Structure formats: structure tokens, C-alpha cells
Length: 368
Image (cartoon, rainbow, N blue to C red; front, side, top):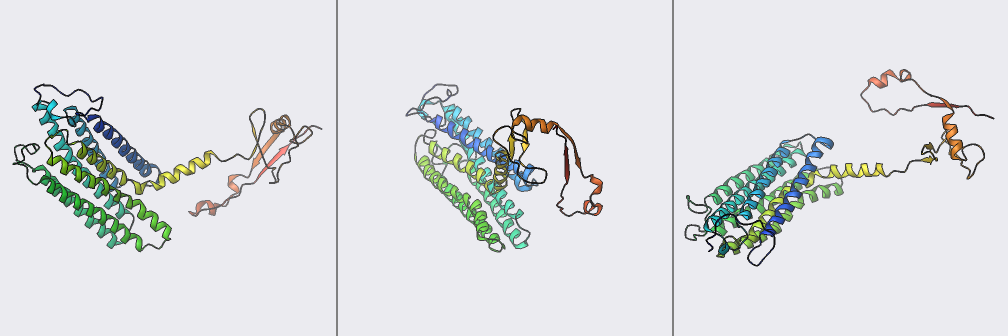
């Protein structure tokens, strides 16, 4: 083990003994996508379909904790996490283990908050008491899972140095602890999906809508795959001898699971956003009915009676040339609209949706 002191230099190149850049890349990409999904969720709640609920407050807290977890990993990278421990000093190794220990605890808290947010989000979709009770049951189970898991990992080793996993005699059953934690995490994900199916089954709507709702929440089951990889890498990590370099796989899989869980909690809220986005894009690309003259003025494609205007290809009278159309537009003397007082007072005072027809007259003077 090297006797050098000070902090590890910033990661730049991947070498056989240094894989720190991999951690930096995963941290940056994961955090960026998690923040983007959160911004979309807040936009939906504040501008499209509100109100801002307790599920949004919880995912806000979860995103903050997830960002702190990512920052903690980067602190570990700065102190040698992902680098061969033979190139590090004892103080660097200890700081790297400190950071990795804190990141694992923050990971559990973040995952717990995403589960609670999804359970409360499902509860917002229904007014049926039995559906709401089912959501609250999963909510309580998620809170219990998060609390117990935090204590199980917090006291994984001796009370004096719970982060120091180098002493195998004082840290027993590390993989078993994580195996039980992650298995229960996956069980809770299936419970969330079961609540969604229970809610959707009684809805009086088309099967297409039911499948759409289920698919939005089924996306969370994709978390299972990186969770399985995480368990595999954790087993390799605990069986290895290099506590900083062998942590690469487990730390990367932890980041993937956490950030994807944050994004998956927002997927059910994204449909109003994409609907509004597509509507605005359609408006921007709608063709304008009419003709643009040489001066850039768009003239209507219809006469005042609703009939199509006939445009000769060359001069002549009427609207055959852009110069004539411009002159005709400038010679318009008045545009009269039916006054607002002529409308029905009863219609304006009612709270019902009304379809009104506006009548207008154009008076033009032309020179013979």
C-alpha cells in the first residue's frame, strides 16, 4: 500500500488500476436524467394538470436525497474509490470507505421515497376506499422496509467503524443482508403493480386505456434487472480483497437502480406533458389559409360570404395580382361587428359552455 498522502488526482484516463472515470460518467448521466424527469413532473403539476400533491413533495425529497447520494459517490471517487488500493494511502482508503458507506444508506432512503411516492400517486387516481386502503398498505410496508433496511446496513460491522469492511471478522453476512433487502424491494414493486391492476380492473373504460395505465407503472419492473446485477457485483465485492477497486461494479449498478427508480416514479405523470407538447407542435405547423402578397400581408382565402376566392394567374381585376389585393385591403373603409350588448344576457350569465356566432360586414369602395 502506498504511503503517499493527500487526495487522489482528478480522474482523467481509464487504466487497468483506475476505473474512476466510469463512476464519474455514470454519476453525471444518471443525475441529469433524474433531474430532467423531475422538472417534467413539476411542469405537469404546475402548468398542465395539478395540483402539487404529497406524492410530488415526496419525490422532490427523493430527488434531493438522490443528488446527495451521487455527490457522495463523487467524494469517494475524489478519495480513490474505483482505484487500486495499493496506489492509495490508508487515509484515502478510509475516506473512500466512508463515502461508499454513506452512499449505500442514501441509496436505501431514495428507493424508499420513490416507492412511497408511487403508492401515493396511485391513491390520487381513485376515490374508492378499498383502492385507497390498498395504496396505504403498500405505503406502510415501504416505510417499514426503508427503516429496517437502513438500520441493517448502518450496523453492518462494529459500532465503532461500521464502514470498515476490510475486517471480515467484524463484518459478517454482508451479502445476505443486501440479498434480503433487495428481494423485499422487488416484492414491493410487484405489490405496487398489483394495486394498479386492482384499481384498473374495476374501471369502466376501454381495454386500450387500461393497458396504457398498466404499462406506465409496469416500467418500474425494469428496475429488477439492474438490481440483480447489483447483487452479483456486491457478492464479488464482498468476496474480493481490494475494497476500493472491486467496488466499481456495485457502485455503478447502485447508481443505475437509484436514478432509474427516480425516473420511473415520474413516467405515469408524463402523458399530459407529451399531449400538450404534441398539441403545440401541431399548432406551430398548421398551414395558414390564404395568400401572401409581395409585402408579406396574408390575405384571406375566402370571401365574406364564405365562398372561395378565385385568383387569376395574372393581372386583370379582382384579386388577380398581389398589388390589387393590397390596394383592396387598404381601401377597406370599415369593419363592423355586432356589439356585445346584443348577445343574450341569460347566456352570458349562465355557467354553461356556449357556442357563439359572430357576424361581420365589410364595406369596400372601388374606383371604376
